Image (cartoon, rainbow, N blue to C red; front, side, top):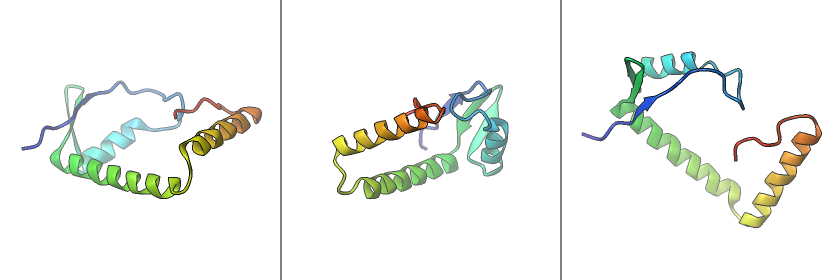
Length: 97
């Protein structure tokens, strides 16, 4: 049996995404059979771990595709310029990196 991930999460508003309905997200994960909850502890099930692994692989595949032919230096410069532009328009340019 695989080791399951156990999370203790405080729900509330997220700084970067205040409109996220974490309760709804957790309820959906429980309905899918990917997460269980007991006394405030949320545990990723084996099916949830499999889904997490699939999502990670997809994310890595997209990351490789997006960065193909782009140096790390150019990528960092682009992100910094975009953050500055967001800040210039009144947004939060310090989004998580």
